[in-house]
Length: 210
Image 1 (tube, rainbow, N blue to C red):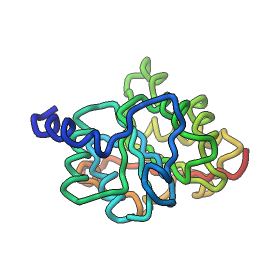
Image 2 (image 1 turned 180 degrees about the horizontal axis):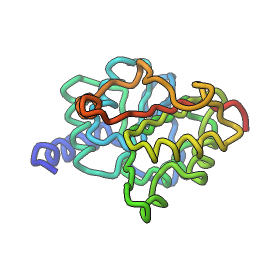
Image 3 (image 1 turned 60 degrees about the horizontal axis):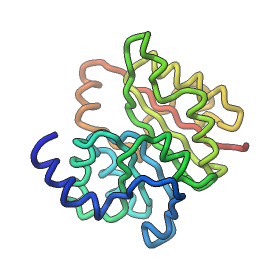
Image 4 (image 1 turned 90 degrees about the vertical axis):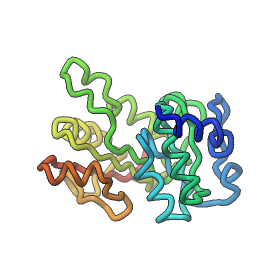
C-alpha cells in the first residue's frame, strides 16, 4: 500500500464507503436515486470499475474488496474522475452477500479476474464454487446477469462447469465462452497479456428462474 493510497483511503473512505453491518442496505437510499444495481466483486486496483462507472453513469455500482491498497487506488480514481455512482464495501463478499444485499435486488454481478489459486491443492479456495453461486443466485433479480472473466484456462473451465450446472442460469453464448462485451473495458494488464498470447475467457449468464 503506497502512501498516496493510504492517505486517499483515510480521507475518502468515509465519503464513498459503506461500513460493513448485518443490516440490509437500500441502494436507492445510498445513491439517492433508482437505477441498475450492480455488484462488483474483487475490483483489484479499480481501473475497470472506475471506467465502467464513467461510461455508464446510470449504473449504481457497489464494489466489494478486502485489499486496502485496491480500495485506496479506486478512491483515487473516483476523486480524479469526479465519479458519484460508486460505493465501496471493504469486507469479505460472502458476508456482504449474506447480510447486506437483499434477495432479488441485483441487476448484475461482475467478477473479473478473481484470484486463480493456481496450485491444485488450493483450488478449493477459488471463489467460483457451487455454494457461492447458489448464494449469489438468491440475490439476483430474474433476468439479472452474472459476468465473470479469467485468464487462467483451467479456472475458466471450472467457472463454465459450475455456472452451467445451475438450472436457473442460462449461458448467453449458448455454450462455451462469450466475446468480451462492450461494457467490460480492456485494461492495460489484460492488453499486455493478450499480446503475450494469454487467452482471456468471458462467461455471461442470465438468471432465468429460481
